[in-house]
Length: 226
Length: 343
Image (tube, rainbow over all chains, first blue to last red; front, side, top):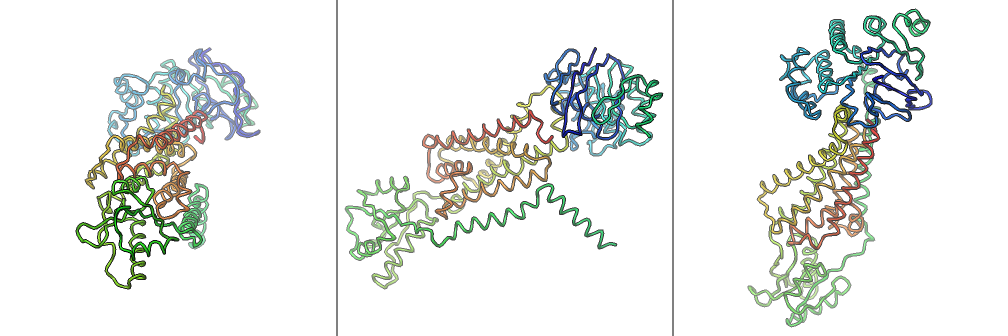
Protein backbone atom coordinates (compact mmCIF):
# COMPACT_ATOMS: atom_id res chain seq x y z
CA UNK A 1 0.00 0.00 0.00
CA UNK A 2 1.24 3.45 -0.83
CA UNK A 3 -0.82 5.36 1.71
CA UNK A 4 -1.88 3.90 5.04
CA UNK A 5 -4.13 5.88 7.29
CA UNK A 6 -5.01 4.67 10.75
CA UNK A 7 -7.48 6.41 13.07
CA UNK A 8 -6.71 9.81 11.62
CA UNK A 9 -8.66 12.36 13.65
CA UNK A 10 -9.10 16.10 13.71
CA UNK A 11 -11.96 17.71 15.57
CA UNK A 12 -12.46 21.46 15.56
CA UNK A 13 -15.34 21.01 17.94
CA UNK A 14 -17.29 17.87 18.69
CA UNK A 15 -19.25 18.19 15.42
CA UNK A 16 -16.86 19.49 12.77
CA UNK A 17 -13.67 17.94 11.46
CA UNK A 18 -12.75 14.33 10.85
CA UNK A 19 -13.77 11.48 13.15
CA UNK A 20 -11.26 8.60 13.55
CA UNK A 21 -10.81 7.35 9.98
CA UNK A 22 -8.78 4.47 8.60
CA UNK A 23 -8.17 3.36 5.01
CA UNK A 24 -5.39 2.42 2.64
CA UNK A 25 -4.61 3.46 -0.93
CA UNK A 26 -2.81 1.50 -3.62
CA UNK A 27 -0.40 3.06 -6.07
CA UNK A 28 -2.06 4.53 -9.15
CA UNK A 29 -5.57 4.92 -7.71
CA UNK A 30 -7.61 7.98 -8.61
CA UNK A 31 -9.85 8.61 -5.66
CA UNK A 32 -12.70 11.08 -5.38
CA UNK A 33 -13.49 12.19 -1.84
CA UNK A 34 -17.12 13.22 -1.79
CA UNK A 35 -19.35 14.81 0.81
CA UNK A 36 -21.29 17.90 1.80
CA UNK A 37 -19.60 21.07 2.95
CA UNK A 38 -18.12 20.53 6.39
CA UNK A 39 -18.02 16.74 5.91
CA UNK A 40 -14.28 16.68 6.54
CA UNK A 41 -13.00 16.33 2.96
CA UNK A 42 -10.65 19.30 2.99
CA UNK A 43 -9.58 18.51 6.55
CA UNK A 44 -8.53 15.04 5.40
CA UNK A 45 -6.54 16.36 2.45
CA UNK A 46 -4.98 19.19 4.44
CA UNK A 47 -3.81 16.74 7.09
CA UNK A 48 -2.22 14.57 4.42
CA UNK A 49 -0.56 17.72 3.07
CA UNK A 50 0.70 18.72 6.52
CA UNK A 51 -1.34 21.92 6.48
CA UNK A 52 -3.27 20.83 9.54
CA UNK A 53 -1.86 18.76 12.34
CA UNK A 54 -4.01 15.76 13.30
CA UNK A 55 -5.25 15.32 16.85
CA UNK A 56 -4.59 11.59 16.67
CA UNK A 57 -3.80 8.83 14.23
CA UNK A 58 -1.02 7.65 12.02
CA UNK A 59 -0.32 8.17 8.35
CA UNK A 60 2.46 6.63 6.31
CA UNK A 61 3.20 7.48 2.70
CA UNK A 62 5.54 5.06 0.97
CA UNK A 63 6.52 3.93 4.46
CA UNK A 64 7.39 7.45 5.65
CA UNK A 65 5.55 8.78 8.67
CA UNK A 66 3.57 11.97 8.03
CA UNK A 67 5.25 13.54 11.06
CA UNK A 68 8.52 13.45 9.17
CA UNK A 69 7.47 16.53 7.20
CA UNK A 70 10.68 17.31 5.39
CA UNK A 71 10.79 13.77 3.97
CA UNK A 72 7.09 13.32 3.30
CA UNK A 73 6.71 16.58 1.32
CA UNK A 74 8.70 14.99 -1.48
CA UNK A 75 6.08 12.24 -1.65
CA UNK A 76 2.97 14.42 -1.65
CA UNK A 77 2.01 17.34 -3.83
CA UNK A 78 -0.98 19.39 -2.68
CA UNK A 79 -3.04 21.66 -4.90
CA UNK A 80 -5.32 23.80 -2.70
CA UNK A 81 -8.66 25.18 -3.82
CA UNK A 82 -7.30 28.75 -4.05
CA UNK A 83 -3.86 29.00 -5.71
CA UNK A 84 -1.29 30.12 -3.16
CA UNK A 85 1.45 31.67 -5.24
CA UNK A 86 3.54 34.81 -4.87
CA UNK A 87 1.25 37.15 -6.84
CA UNK A 88 3.76 39.91 -7.49
CA UNK A 89 6.28 37.58 -9.09
CA UNK A 90 6.36 35.86 -12.45
CA UNK A 91 5.32 32.30 -13.21
CA UNK A 92 8.94 31.38 -13.80
CA UNK A 93 10.12 32.99 -10.56
CA UNK A 94 7.48 31.12 -8.56
CA UNK A 95 8.41 27.79 -10.09
CA UNK A 96 12.14 28.42 -9.77
CA UNK A 97 11.78 29.42 -6.12
CA UNK A 98 10.01 26.18 -5.26
CA UNK A 99 12.33 24.13 -7.48
CA UNK A 100 15.24 25.63 -5.56
CA UNK A 101 13.63 24.75 -2.22
CA UNK A 102 12.94 21.22 -3.46
CA UNK A 103 16.54 21.03 -4.67
CA UNK A 104 15.22 20.17 -8.11
CA UNK A 105 17.25 21.27 -11.17
CA UNK A 106 15.85 24.35 -12.97
CA UNK A 107 15.58 22.18 -16.06
CA UNK A 108 12.49 20.71 -14.41
CA UNK A 109 10.90 24.18 -14.43
CA UNK A 110 11.26 24.30 -18.21
CA UNK A 111 9.72 20.83 -18.44
CA UNK A 112 6.77 21.92 -16.32
CA UNK A 113 6.31 25.12 -18.33
CA UNK A 114 6.22 23.08 -21.51
CA UNK A 115 4.08 20.28 -20.12
CA UNK A 116 1.44 22.70 -18.84
CA UNK A 117 1.51 25.07 -21.85
CA UNK A 118 2.86 27.88 -19.71
CA UNK A 119 5.87 28.86 -21.82
CA UNK A 120 4.09 31.90 -23.25
CA UNK A 121 3.28 33.10 -19.74
CA UNK A 122 6.60 32.42 -18.04
CA UNK A 123 7.37 36.14 -17.61
CA UNK A 124 3.83 37.10 -16.60
CA UNK A 125 3.10 37.97 -13.01
CA UNK A 126 0.73 35.58 -11.27
CA UNK A 127 -1.75 38.39 -10.59
CA UNK A 128 -2.09 38.94 -14.35
CA UNK A 129 -3.17 35.34 -15.00
CA UNK A 130 -6.68 33.90 -15.30
CA UNK A 131 -7.96 31.47 -12.66
CA UNK A 132 -7.36 28.55 -14.97
CA UNK A 133 -3.78 29.56 -15.66
CA UNK A 134 -3.11 30.13 -11.97
CA UNK A 135 -4.46 26.66 -11.28
CA UNK A 136 -2.13 25.26 -13.95
CA UNK A 137 0.87 26.96 -12.33
CA UNK A 138 -0.28 25.63 -8.97
CA UNK A 139 -0.46 22.08 -10.30
CA UNK A 140 2.88 22.53 -12.03
CA UNK A 141 4.42 23.59 -8.75
CA UNK A 142 2.99 20.54 -6.98
CA UNK A 143 4.64 18.35 -9.61
CA UNK A 144 8.08 20.00 -9.43
CA UNK A 145 9.51 17.36 -7.11
CA UNK A 146 7.69 14.64 -9.07
CA UNK A 147 5.79 13.33 -6.02
CA UNK A 148 4.05 9.94 -6.40
CA UNK A 149 0.91 11.18 -4.59
CA UNK A 150 -1.14 14.24 -5.58
CA UNK A 151 -3.94 15.84 -3.59
CA UNK A 152 -6.44 18.24 -5.18
CA UNK A 153 -8.85 20.17 -2.99
CA UNK A 154 -11.98 21.18 -4.96
CA UNK A 155 -9.86 21.61 -8.11
CA UNK A 156 -12.68 22.76 -10.39
CA UNK A 157 -14.78 24.81 -7.97
CA UNK A 158 -13.62 28.14 -9.36
CA UNK A 159 -13.23 27.10 -13.00
CA UNK A 160 -15.63 27.66 -15.88
CA UNK A 161 -16.75 24.91 -18.24
CA UNK A 162 -13.82 25.15 -20.66
CA UNK A 163 -11.25 25.36 -17.88
CA UNK A 164 -12.85 22.42 -16.12
CA UNK A 165 -12.58 20.29 -19.27
CA UNK A 166 -8.97 21.30 -19.59
CA UNK A 167 -8.36 20.32 -15.98
CA UNK A 168 -9.91 16.87 -16.57
CA UNK A 169 -7.51 16.33 -19.49
CA UNK A 170 -4.64 17.37 -17.25
CA UNK A 171 -5.72 15.03 -14.49
CA UNK A 172 -5.95 12.13 -16.94
CA UNK A 173 -2.44 12.84 -18.18
CA UNK A 174 -1.06 12.97 -14.63
CA UNK A 175 -2.91 9.77 -13.70
CA UNK A 176 -1.65 7.98 -16.79
CA UNK A 177 1.87 8.95 -15.73
CA UNK A 178 1.34 6.62 -12.75
CA UNK A 179 0.51 9.08 -10.00
CA UNK A 180 -1.83 8.32 -7.14
CA UNK A 181 -4.45 11.03 -6.92
CA UNK A 182 -7.00 12.08 -4.31
CA UNK A 183 -9.39 14.88 -5.13
CA UNK A 184 -12.39 16.33 -3.39
CA UNK A 185 -15.46 17.15 -5.40
CA UNK A 186 -19.13 18.08 -5.32
CA UNK A 187 -19.84 17.25 -8.94
CA UNK A 188 -21.32 13.76 -9.67
CA UNK A 189 -20.35 13.91 -13.36
CA UNK A 190 -16.77 14.70 -12.39
CA UNK A 191 -16.64 11.78 -10.00
CA UNK A 192 -18.19 9.43 -12.55
CA UNK A 193 -15.85 10.30 -15.38
CA UNK A 194 -12.62 10.49 -13.42
CA UNK A 195 -12.51 8.36 -10.28
CA UNK A 196 -11.45 4.75 -9.98
CA UNK A 197 -12.58 4.73 -6.35
CA UNK A 198 -14.97 6.85 -4.33
CA UNK A 199 -14.89 7.69 -0.65
CA UNK A 200 -17.84 9.46 0.94
CA UNK A 201 -17.47 11.45 4.10
CA UNK A 202 -20.51 12.46 6.10
CA UNK A 203 -20.26 14.58 9.26
CA UNK A 204 -16.60 13.64 9.56
CA UNK A 205 -17.08 9.88 9.16
CA UNK A 206 -16.24 7.65 6.21
CA UNK A 207 -19.62 6.21 5.18
CA UNK A 208 -18.74 4.71 1.80
CA UNK A 209 -15.58 3.40 0.20
CA UNK A 210 -15.83 1.54 -3.11
CA UNK A 211 -15.91 1.62 -6.88
CA UNK A 212 -17.85 4.28 -8.85
CA UNK A 213 -20.27 1.59 -10.13
CA UNK A 214 -21.14 0.52 -6.59
CA UNK A 215 -21.39 4.13 -5.47
CA UNK A 216 -23.83 5.21 -8.17
CA UNK A 217 -26.00 2.18 -7.49
CA UNK A 218 -25.94 2.68 -3.73
CA UNK A 219 -28.27 4.64 -1.49
CA UNK A 220 -25.37 6.76 -0.36
CA UNK A 221 -25.29 8.65 -3.65
CA UNK A 222 -29.06 9.12 -3.65
CA UNK A 223 -29.06 10.32 -0.06
CA UNK A 224 -26.12 12.62 -0.66
CA UNK A 225 -27.73 14.37 -3.62
CA UNK A 226 -31.36 14.00 -2.61
CA UNK B 1 -32.76 52.36 -1.09
CA UNK B 2 -29.44 54.05 -1.68
CA UNK B 3 -29.15 55.25 1.93
CA UNK B 4 -30.14 51.80 3.17
CA UNK B 5 -27.35 50.24 1.10
CA UNK B 6 -24.85 52.81 2.29
CA UNK B 7 -25.82 52.16 5.90
CA UNK B 8 -25.61 48.42 5.40
CA UNK B 9 -22.17 48.76 3.85
CA UNK B 10 -21.02 51.12 6.58
CA UNK B 11 -22.15 48.67 9.24
CA UNK B 12 -20.39 45.92 7.36
CA UNK B 13 -17.20 48.00 7.28
CA UNK B 14 -17.50 48.59 11.02
CA UNK B 15 -17.99 44.90 11.57
CA UNK B 16 -14.89 44.18 9.49
CA UNK B 17 -12.95 46.78 11.48
CA UNK B 18 -14.11 45.11 14.67
CA UNK B 19 -13.26 41.68 13.36
CA UNK B 20 -9.78 42.62 12.18
CA UNK B 21 -9.21 44.63 15.38
CA UNK B 22 -8.64 47.96 13.60
CA UNK B 23 -11.28 49.44 15.89
CA UNK B 24 -8.97 48.80 18.84
CA UNK B 25 -6.70 51.55 17.54
CA UNK B 26 -9.52 54.05 17.87
CA UNK B 27 -9.76 53.15 21.53
CA UNK B 28 -6.12 52.51 22.20
CA UNK B 29 -4.50 55.64 20.77
CA UNK B 30 -6.58 58.18 22.76
CA UNK B 31 -6.21 56.02 25.85
CA UNK B 32 -2.48 55.81 25.39
CA UNK B 33 -2.10 59.54 24.79
CA UNK B 34 -4.27 60.26 27.84
CA UNK B 35 -2.15 58.05 30.09
CA UNK B 36 1.09 59.48 28.68
CA UNK B 37 -0.10 63.05 29.21
CA UNK B 38 -1.14 62.19 32.75
CA UNK B 39 2.35 60.92 33.38
CA UNK B 40 3.91 64.04 31.87
CA UNK B 41 1.69 66.67 33.42
CA UNK B 42 0.99 65.44 36.90
CA UNK B 43 1.14 68.40 39.28
CA UNK B 44 2.11 66.31 42.27
CA UNK B 45 5.29 65.07 40.65
CA UNK B 46 8.31 65.96 42.83
CA UNK B 47 10.32 68.75 41.30
CA UNK B 48 13.67 67.35 40.37
CA UNK B 49 16.41 69.30 42.16
CA UNK B 50 19.03 70.97 40.01
CA UNK B 51 22.32 69.33 40.88
CA UNK B 52 25.07 71.87 40.32
CA UNK B 53 28.79 71.41 40.72
CA UNK B 54 30.89 74.24 42.15
CA UNK B 55 34.71 74.40 42.12
CA UNK B 56 36.23 74.26 45.59
CA UNK B 57 39.12 76.58 44.79
CA UNK B 58 37.22 79.25 42.87
CA UNK B 59 36.03 82.39 44.56
CA UNK B 60 32.41 82.69 43.44
CA UNK B 61 30.80 86.07 44.03
CA UNK B 62 29.18 86.16 47.51
CA UNK B 63 25.74 86.99 46.09
CA UNK B 64 25.91 83.85 43.93
CA UNK B 65 26.83 81.62 46.85
CA UNK B 66 24.24 83.32 49.01
CA UNK B 67 21.49 82.85 46.40
CA UNK B 68 22.42 79.20 45.85
CA UNK B 69 22.36 78.56 49.57
CA UNK B 70 19.01 80.33 49.92
CA UNK B 71 17.60 78.17 47.13
CA UNK B 72 18.71 74.87 48.67
CA UNK B 73 15.24 73.42 48.14
CA UNK B 74 15.69 73.53 44.37
CA UNK B 75 19.47 73.55 43.98
CA UNK B 76 21.71 70.83 45.33
CA UNK B 77 25.38 71.78 45.41
CA UNK B 78 28.24 69.34 44.93
CA UNK B 79 31.73 70.69 45.54
CA UNK B 80 34.29 69.40 43.05
CA UNK B 81 38.08 69.61 43.18
CA UNK B 82 38.51 70.79 39.61
CA UNK B 83 36.97 70.88 36.14
CA UNK B 84 38.06 67.26 35.43
CA UNK B 85 36.17 65.94 38.42
CA UNK B 86 33.15 68.01 37.40
CA UNK B 87 33.30 66.56 33.89
CA UNK B 88 33.48 63.03 35.27
CA UNK B 89 30.47 63.58 37.54
CA UNK B 90 28.58 65.08 34.61
CA UNK B 91 29.26 62.04 32.45
CA UNK B 92 28.18 59.78 35.30
CA UNK B 93 24.99 61.90 35.48
CA UNK B 94 25.57 62.63 39.15
CA UNK B 95 25.28 66.35 38.52
CA UNK B 96 23.50 68.42 35.85
CA UNK B 97 26.12 71.12 35.34
CA UNK B 98 29.30 72.75 36.64
CA UNK B 99 29.79 76.48 37.11
CA UNK B 100 33.25 77.52 35.92
CA UNK B 101 35.08 80.80 35.52
CA UNK B 102 34.40 82.26 32.08
CA UNK B 103 37.87 82.86 30.64
CA UNK B 104 36.48 85.03 27.83
CA UNK B 105 34.54 87.33 30.11
CA UNK B 106 36.17 87.77 33.52
CA UNK B 107 33.74 88.16 36.37
CA UNK B 108 31.07 86.02 34.81
CA UNK B 109 30.51 82.26 34.76
CA UNK B 110 30.52 79.51 32.15
CA UNK B 111 28.15 76.60 32.56
CA UNK B 112 29.54 73.18 31.66
CA UNK B 113 26.76 70.73 30.70
CA UNK B 114 26.34 67.46 28.83
CA UNK B 115 24.05 68.87 26.16
CA UNK B 116 23.31 72.47 25.32
CA UNK B 117 19.77 71.78 24.10
CA UNK B 118 18.41 69.86 27.04
CA UNK B 119 15.91 70.30 29.82
CA UNK B 120 18.50 70.26 32.67
CA UNK B 121 20.51 73.04 30.93
CA UNK B 122 17.39 75.11 30.44
CA UNK B 123 16.40 74.57 34.07
CA UNK B 124 19.83 75.68 35.36
CA UNK B 125 19.91 78.82 33.20
CA UNK B 126 16.37 79.80 34.13
CA UNK B 127 16.89 79.14 37.84
CA UNK B 128 20.10 81.15 38.00
CA UNK B 129 18.52 83.94 36.01
CA UNK B 130 15.64 84.06 38.49
CA UNK B 131 18.00 83.94 41.47
CA UNK B 132 20.06 86.75 40.03
CA UNK B 133 17.02 88.93 39.48
CA UNK B 134 15.91 88.31 43.05
CA UNK B 135 19.38 89.07 44.45
CA UNK B 136 20.49 91.98 42.28
CA UNK B 137 17.50 93.03 40.22
CA UNK B 138 19.60 93.59 37.12
CA UNK B 139 19.51 91.76 33.84
CA UNK B 140 23.22 91.05 33.17
CA UNK B 141 23.48 87.31 33.50
CA UNK B 142 25.82 85.52 35.91
CA UNK B 143 26.11 82.76 33.32
CA UNK B 144 27.45 84.23 30.08
CA UNK B 145 28.59 81.06 28.32
CA UNK B 146 27.41 77.48 28.01
CA UNK B 147 29.99 74.79 27.24
CA UNK B 148 28.43 71.48 26.17
CA UNK B 149 30.50 68.32 26.50
CA UNK B 150 28.85 66.96 23.39
CA UNK B 151 28.65 69.04 20.27
CA UNK B 152 26.43 68.25 17.32
CA UNK B 153 23.33 70.37 17.51
CA UNK B 154 19.70 69.44 17.74
CA UNK B 155 19.88 67.08 14.73
CA UNK B 156 22.36 64.86 16.46
CA UNK B 157 20.54 65.06 19.79
CA UNK B 158 17.43 63.63 18.17
CA UNK B 159 19.33 60.93 16.25
CA UNK B 160 18.79 58.14 18.86
CA UNK B 161 15.03 58.76 18.72
CA UNK B 162 15.00 58.51 14.92
CA UNK B 163 17.05 55.33 15.03
CA UNK B 164 14.65 53.87 17.61
CA UNK B 165 11.73 54.80 15.36
CA UNK B 166 13.32 53.05 12.39
CA UNK B 167 14.08 49.88 14.32
CA UNK B 168 10.56 49.77 15.78
CA UNK B 169 9.01 50.56 12.41
CA UNK B 170 10.61 47.51 10.84
CA UNK B 171 9.93 45.36 13.90
CA UNK B 172 6.37 46.31 14.73
CA UNK B 173 4.87 47.62 11.50
CA UNK B 174 6.58 45.95 8.55
CA UNK B 175 7.40 42.46 9.79
CA UNK B 176 4.12 41.49 11.51
CA UNK B 177 2.16 42.52 8.41
CA UNK B 178 4.46 40.53 6.16
CA UNK B 179 4.28 37.40 8.30
CA UNK B 180 0.50 37.71 8.55
CA UNK B 181 0.25 38.18 4.78
CA UNK B 182 2.17 34.98 4.18
CA UNK B 183 -0.18 33.21 6.57
CA UNK B 184 -3.30 34.81 5.13
CA UNK B 185 -2.45 33.92 1.52
CA UNK B 186 -1.30 30.43 2.58
CA UNK B 187 2.16 31.18 1.19
CA UNK B 188 3.79 29.99 4.35
CA UNK B 189 1.97 26.67 4.07
CA UNK B 190 3.09 26.44 0.45
CA UNK B 191 6.68 26.97 1.57
CA UNK B 192 6.23 24.36 4.29
CA UNK B 193 5.34 21.88 1.57
CA UNK B 194 8.95 21.96 0.51
CA UNK B 195 11.71 20.31 2.54
CA UNK B 196 12.64 23.57 4.29
CA UNK B 197 12.62 23.51 8.08
CA UNK B 198 10.43 25.84 10.12
CA UNK B 199 13.55 27.25 11.73
CA UNK B 200 15.00 28.20 8.33
CA UNK B 201 11.92 30.23 7.47
CA UNK B 202 12.02 31.97 10.84
CA UNK B 203 15.71 32.79 10.60
CA UNK B 204 15.20 34.13 7.07
CA UNK B 205 12.44 36.43 8.31
CA UNK B 206 14.55 37.74 11.20
CA UNK B 207 17.52 38.29 8.90
CA UNK B 208 15.28 40.17 6.48
CA UNK B 209 14.15 42.42 9.34
CA UNK B 210 17.72 43.00 10.45
CA UNK B 211 18.88 43.82 6.92
CA UNK B 212 15.99 46.27 6.43
CA UNK B 213 16.79 47.94 9.75
CA UNK B 214 20.47 48.24 9.01
CA UNK B 215 19.79 49.61 5.54
CA UNK B 216 17.45 52.24 7.00
CA UNK B 217 19.99 53.21 9.68
CA UNK B 218 22.81 53.39 7.16
CA UNK B 219 20.69 55.49 4.83
CA UNK B 220 19.88 57.88 7.67
CA UNK B 221 23.57 58.24 8.55
CA UNK B 222 24.51 58.88 4.94
CA UNK B 223 21.78 61.47 4.48
CA UNK B 224 22.49 63.27 7.73
CA UNK B 225 26.28 62.76 7.51
CA UNK B 226 26.24 61.57 11.10
CA UNK B 227 29.53 60.11 12.21
CA UNK B 228 29.99 57.72 15.13
CA UNK B 229 33.09 57.69 17.33
CA UNK B 230 32.65 54.22 18.84
CA UNK B 231 31.58 52.53 15.63
CA UNK B 232 31.89 48.91 16.76
CA UNK B 233 29.92 49.56 19.93
CA UNK B 234 27.27 51.26 17.83
CA UNK B 235 27.12 48.39 15.34
CA UNK B 236 26.85 45.91 18.22
CA UNK B 237 23.76 47.67 19.57
CA UNK B 238 22.16 48.15 16.16
CA UNK B 239 22.71 44.44 15.57
CA UNK B 240 21.25 43.47 18.96
CA UNK B 241 18.31 45.88 18.61
CA UNK B 242 17.46 44.82 15.09
CA UNK B 243 17.62 41.16 16.11
CA UNK B 244 15.45 41.75 19.17
CA UNK B 245 12.73 43.73 17.43
CA UNK B 246 12.76 41.67 14.23
CA UNK B 247 12.20 38.47 16.23
CA UNK B 248 9.56 40.32 18.27
CA UNK B 249 7.83 41.47 15.06
CA UNK B 250 7.78 37.98 13.57
CA UNK B 251 6.19 36.76 16.80
CA UNK B 252 3.50 39.45 16.59
CA UNK B 253 2.81 38.38 13.01
CA UNK B 254 2.19 34.86 14.26
CA UNK B 255 -0.46 36.11 16.66
CA UNK B 256 -2.54 37.43 13.75
CA UNK B 257 -4.57 35.72 11.10
CA UNK B 258 -4.43 38.53 8.55
CA UNK B 259 -2.60 41.71 7.60
CA UNK B 260 -5.18 44.10 9.01
CA UNK B 261 -4.90 42.51 12.45
CA UNK B 262 -1.13 42.55 12.22
CA UNK B 263 -1.06 46.26 11.41
CA UNK B 264 -3.32 47.02 14.36
CA UNK B 265 -1.32 44.88 16.74
CA UNK B 266 1.87 46.43 15.37
CA UNK B 267 0.69 49.95 16.23
CA UNK B 268 -0.47 48.75 19.65
CA UNK B 269 3.10 47.67 20.33
CA UNK B 270 4.85 50.43 18.39
CA UNK B 271 3.53 53.40 20.37
CA UNK B 272 4.17 52.10 23.89
CA UNK B 273 7.67 51.07 22.88
CA UNK B 274 8.44 54.36 21.21
CA UNK B 275 6.97 57.02 23.44
CA UNK B 276 8.14 56.14 26.96
CA UNK B 277 11.66 55.67 25.69
CA UNK B 278 11.73 58.80 23.58
CA UNK B 279 9.95 60.92 26.22
CA UNK B 280 11.54 59.50 29.34
CA UNK B 281 13.78 62.57 29.60
CA UNK B 282 10.73 64.76 30.06
CA UNK B 283 9.03 62.88 32.82
CA UNK B 284 10.18 61.26 36.02
CA UNK B 285 7.16 58.95 35.94
CA UNK B 286 7.98 57.81 32.43
CA UNK B 287 11.58 57.32 33.48
CA UNK B 288 10.29 54.77 35.99
CA UNK B 289 8.06 52.97 33.46
CA UNK B 290 10.33 53.10 30.41
CA UNK B 291 13.03 50.63 31.57
CA UNK B 292 10.39 47.90 31.56
CA UNK B 293 10.26 48.22 27.75
CA UNK B 294 12.87 46.45 25.62
CA UNK B 295 13.00 49.59 23.51
CA UNK B 296 14.41 51.54 26.46
CA UNK B 297 17.21 49.00 26.83
CA UNK B 298 18.03 49.76 23.21
CA UNK B 299 17.46 53.51 23.27
CA UNK B 300 19.52 54.40 26.34
CA UNK B 301 22.73 52.66 25.21
CA UNK B 302 22.24 54.10 21.74
CA UNK B 303 21.97 57.58 23.22
CA UNK B 304 25.03 57.02 25.36
CA UNK B 305 27.07 55.78 22.40
CA UNK B 306 25.93 58.47 19.98
CA UNK B 307 25.89 61.47 22.29
CA UNK B 308 28.18 60.67 25.18
CA UNK B 309 30.78 58.45 23.51
CA UNK B 310 29.62 55.54 25.68
CA UNK B 311 31.11 52.07 25.30
CA UNK B 312 29.23 48.81 24.83
CA UNK B 313 31.46 47.20 27.45
CA UNK B 314 29.65 49.26 30.09
CA UNK B 315 26.25 48.22 28.79
CA UNK B 316 26.51 44.45 28.76
CA UNK B 317 23.21 44.08 30.68
CA UNK B 318 21.31 45.92 27.96
CA UNK B 319 23.04 43.90 25.24
CA UNK B 320 22.21 40.58 26.93
CA UNK B 321 18.65 41.77 27.62
CA UNK B 322 18.05 42.57 23.94
CA UNK B 323 19.42 39.21 22.82
CA UNK B 324 17.33 37.46 25.47
CA UNK B 325 14.08 39.14 24.36
CA UNK B 326 14.95 38.34 20.74
CA UNK B 327 15.68 34.69 21.48
CA UNK B 328 12.60 34.32 23.66
CA UNK B 329 10.21 35.73 21.04
CA UNK B 330 11.98 33.68 18.37
CA UNK B 331 11.35 30.55 20.44
CA UNK B 332 7.68 31.47 20.88
CA UNK B 333 7.35 31.99 17.12
CA UNK B 334 8.84 28.57 16.45
CA UNK B 335 6.31 26.99 18.84
CA UNK B 336 3.40 28.76 17.13
CA UNK B 337 4.71 27.84 13.70
CA UNK B 338 5.02 24.16 14.60
CA UNK B 339 1.43 24.25 15.83
CA UNK B 340 0.35 25.96 12.57
CA UNK B 341 -1.11 28.74 14.71
CA UNK B 342 -3.93 30.63 12.92
CA UNK B 343 -2.75 29.37 9.55
